[in-house]
Image 1 (tube, rainbow, N blue to C red):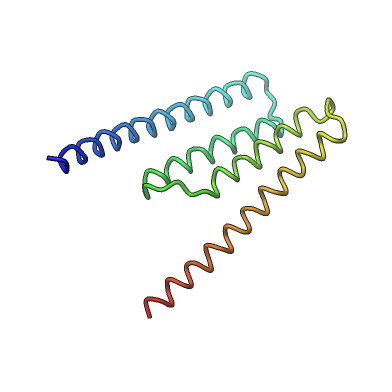
Image 2 (cartoon, rainbow, N blue to C red; image 1 turned 90 degrees about the horizontal axis):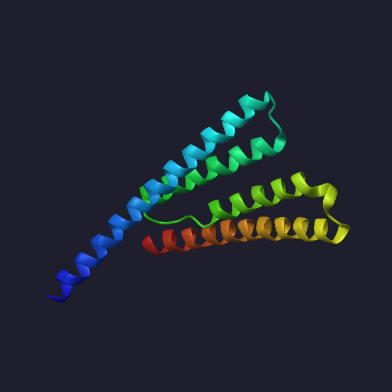
Length: 134
């Protein structure tokens, strides 16, 4: 009886998760369309427009990877955060004081270093698991 309840809850959560992923993917595709429409309407493509499109593509990649593997790779949201911070810096740099620019740059640096550490640690863990199998 307990196993049936656990299976039902697990199935309901998996379905909810799949619906949520589809909603995120569709919303992202709609946002891409709106952004492209705005670029066509203005006959101009700025760096911030391109960075925003890149963020949308990273979100779609994250959804695709999550849907295929069932796991959220931690590095993809970090890439998105770096691009979002860079876009924020590019758009509003004229309005920032030196400390705010340094703070945003430091945040980008910390996230980048975190990605390097995660990549390095994943390599170490992978090699340890490979050695145990031998």
